Length: 401
Ligand SMILES: Cc1cc2nc3c(=O)[nH]c(=O)nc-3n(C[C@H](O)[C@H](O)[C@H](O)COP(=O)(O)OP(=O)(O)OC[C@H]3O[C@@H](n4cnc5c(N)ncnc54)[C@H](O)[C@@H]3O)c2cc1C
Image (cartoon, rainbow, N blue to C red; front, side, top):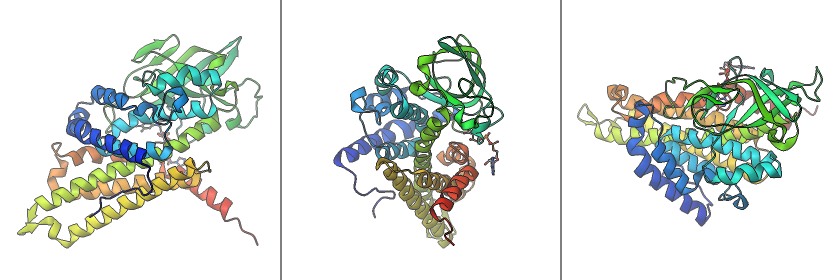
């Protein structure tokens, strides 16, 4: 039988990259993931290995020292990595979003300054939109930048930064008043600042504090933090793209590719859950036969495999659409929505197949069960995806009567 989640039409280079990553996942990630996750330990050795493989520069253009690969290649690598451990895909995801935003929207000087070191994995990126009072409603951001000579002074509190502690470059979205009088639409008065900092916790730069790691139910190992700006001074040449008022669009562009990425993670976690479920079902006996021989369990496996296939196909479609240069917000929203919901369902079915043992920390499915819910929330909740999908459908199917 062919393996699930195969992708037709890949080039030799794509196949080679994927087989290298898959090998790395099987040998270096899966054997240690659950233990590290239970200890909430940062997987430094794995990150060093990813650096060596060049994964931090996968989509960064060759002229800046990256591999110049497509979103599809990237998403398929993320799928493989998440199959091993979702947290590791989180470590490269925010980096990739910031690199993508720089590539698309940065000034020449900003690209030359950041991208080569990002490609090498020496500068690592995080992005920050959410605040304690808002996540879905980005237009309600309250953090503010005010111009003071050749600098901006930033104040406000940010929430939920994946890689907030370990990163050295944070793309921060704030409200900026310069040239945007009262009453300007919120999305036109926001600016993305490229904030360089030391990795670590505490005051990592004058006026910038990363208080510590948020204690999470899953998605451990990767740090998620708050970020406090109190009179943080940023030079004007660190406004992304050099012009204020474009931050909202820049971030939404980044989040759109991020959604394909989250869909890919959902695919990877679901694949692993299927693998665990189908293996366990052939080992565990009840009523004189392997539980895989009970039709109810076979039906579960059939449903799980079908969901893995469907999510993978939608994710690949969304990535290919973006790679072709077309708008892909509809496809990315659908892929993210479906892959994260299916992931949760497939993981739950694999958990049920494990019976009581699924509840034991000795079994990998316990970790997956705590990881899957994050995908329902990150890069826009299911409700936000449905809003995007609904709006686009009404654009495409406008009533002509
Ligand atoms: C582990 C983790 C890592 C994260 N990493 C990052 C990061 O790196 N950078 C970053 O900027 N953010 C990050 N986030 C934040 C994440 O993007 C937000 O949590 C998410 O967007 C939801 O926002 P919220 O938590 O404020 O929920 P809310 O916006 O308060 O929503 C609460 C509920 O109301 C629903 N809802 C909201 N508005 C509507 C509406 N109009 N119609 C119907 N239902 C609605 C939502 O779907 C949700 O169910 C992270 C979050 C987590 C948990």
